[in-house]
Image (cartoon, rainbow over all chains, first blue to last red; front, side, top):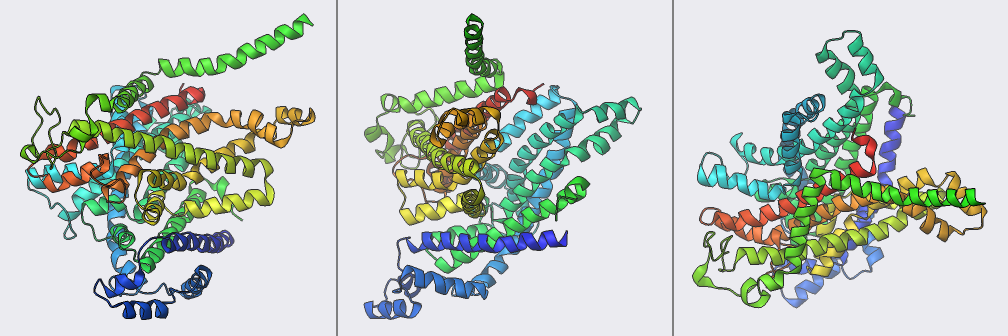
Length: 308
Length: 296
């Protein structure tokens, strides 16, 4: 098992080099002069030229990329053009806000999605099933940013009971968490239902019922446990996606997380910040994926034997 | 001899009836048909947008005397912050959304499909190189990749299509590769090779048609995803630039007027949702029709 984890982490390295190459290339071709961004609109031509020389912006693409990679391997992604803070200091100061929101959002979506999916599957084509699946589909189809705006309009503007944005006590978490939670809940409920439906028709479920096992135990111990793999996959993917900064939700609610930081950095051509953020997001995403794979082996011991 | 011919005939008849069967199953699926009808109405509105409302005089012409008016008989969905009719802007915006959705999905489908087919068919080192490249792209959330690309290229309709298209290539490559892998070792492929079919012919005539089912489903859902990405990019100011009507941008403008004019942000969002909902319904219906064992 440990061997497997180490192997997976080692495989991450080439992916990260590739990711950094793609991001570097894209940012290299993005219009805008970093020297101008740092020194501002009123800088003299001479000062700009000096800074460009100092930053090595006149070097060729490959020289610049090699320098970037050599520094990055040592953990140095440079400083933000905007705030002049060390890139990873800035990211780590913003990440807790994203992590909290992602955690609460996923928790909410699991608490809604899995029970709804299980009940829908056990009562297929019932009124409950039909109604909740319509809502789940609406939840999946609703753009997050629009839902966020509608919640702000209802609870902040009209009713005036919740803050419309920003970061603070628990009341600030409610609207963004509902926004993230409901759409994820939709996909989790749909996946739970279809996975349960496949399991519930298996012979061993019929055997369990025939033996007289309580329906509650049939559903939760025999069926749900075996239907968990695809559900874990969806939950994990949603969590990974939210950790990468729910860019739009964070923008709508002025949430000080890494998603909004990334949007601002891309708009301002803050290259070091964008590089650091994308690499950071790729790492978190891959680690979440690895955790899902490890979790599989606990849910289904047969999978464990494949991890060598 | 006659026996063989009639067998051939029935073979053909069976092949045709497969797609006919799928069509019938989709038509019988109420949810899929609801999705199809809604989508058809949206497409018709977009196609005849010019007939319903003139672009220059209604859609982008400002009329400040009538700004932020609520829904009325004259303006059924009200007017925006520049006094422009929201319904007219929404149906013209539908052109942009549907165009970006369709073109970008075609782009990712063609590029991803070719890469996936080659990787799956040839396997070995070739497969490894292509799929590891795809893994790199998959490690970057697609909306972030699209944001970065559109910033580099500059925001225009074409660049938006390219950005959204590129960011979705890996998912098609993976789906096509997976289907190719299950098909390429089957006997009919061996037979095609035995009668002298070359690789190109085998891939185009025998393998790709058999991978269509998952690809069609993914493409339908992919159009929904692409429309959402386009709206998202415009919402954060990286997509279509004003005064062109784009759903995400209209919504973003409406943010400022949540207190005084609720309708400005509300209606474009409803149209985005309904479009995506219709594509999801249709996509689900197609999936059920193509894989009948899912729906028992």
